[in-house]
Image 1 (cartoon, rainbow, N blue to C red):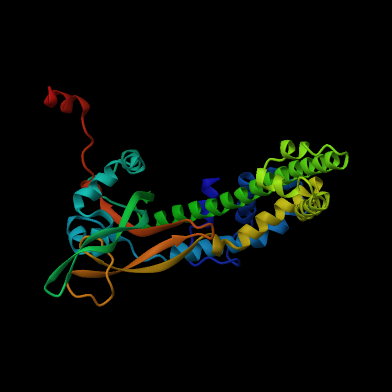
Image 2: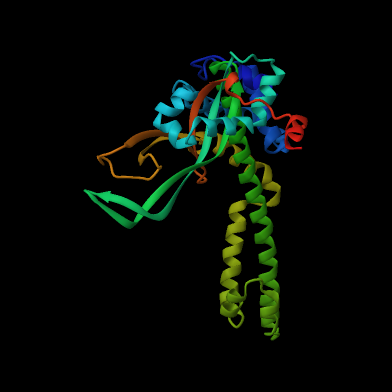
Length: 345
C-alpha cells in the first residue's frame, strides 16, 4: 500500500487530470482499509469516493509542495538563526534531540549513510505559553515582579527522514493522507458511540417514564445516570416525554442501524472533501527576546521577530513545523554500555 501512495504523490504539480485511474482506485481501497471495509458493499462506492479522494490528494500535494526549502541545522545556524535558538537553545540541545530519535538512527543504519551525507525531514514541536513573574528594564530602572509570557517548544519530532528533500516530501504527503483517513475513522467511531449512548438513554427514559406513570416514583433516582437530570424530571412525566422526543430526534438524524453504510460513506466523503480543514498551515509571528520571553513589536534591545509555520487542524491540534536537513556527522556517537561501565568502575 505504501508503494502506491508514493506513486500517487511522486510527480510534481499533479492534478486530477494527471492522476492515474489505477492509483486513484488503490487510494480508494486504502481509504476503505483505514475506515470501514464494509463500504465495498456500498453500491458504486468507487464512483462515490473518487471525487473526495482526488480533492484530498490535491490539497495534500499543494500543502507539502508549498513548504519552504529545508533549513540546514548545524552549529553555525543554531547560533545565527533565531528560530533555531528558540527551538533548541543550543546546538548541543539539538544533538540531544536527534540522538534520541530512533527513526533517525534506524534510517542511517539501514541505508548505510556516511558522516558526509545530509538527512532531510520535517521537525514538528509543541508550542506553549506560560505566564510567570520576572524582571524587566524600563529605561534605566529594573522593574521586578513583572508578568511575562515565556514561550516554550517541546516534544520535538523528526518525520519524513530521507536522503533527499523530494523523497521526504513524498513521505510527508503519504503521512498526511493517512492522517485524513484516520480522522474519518474517528468520526465513524464517534457516530457509532453516539448511537449506542442514545439508544441506551432512550431505553432508560422509557423505563423511567413507565415506572412514574405506574406510580413508582422512587425509581426515578435509581434509573437515572445523571443525578441532576433526575432531580429535574423525576416528578414530571411531561418533561420526560419531551426528553424522549429529543433523543428520538437525535437517533433519527443518525439514521437506522441498517443505514449505517450510508452514514459511514457520508462521513468518509465529507472528511476527504474537507481535507483543507483537517490539515492546514498558517504563519505565526512571535517577537521574543533571548530568553524566549514575548515582547511587543518595536521593542528595543536584543529581540527577534520570528515567522513560524504552524500546522493545525479543525480538531484543535497544532504543531510548529520546520522542513530541515542536517549532517549525519552531527549525530552523536551511540553510547557504548561497556565503555561507560568501565569508566564508571
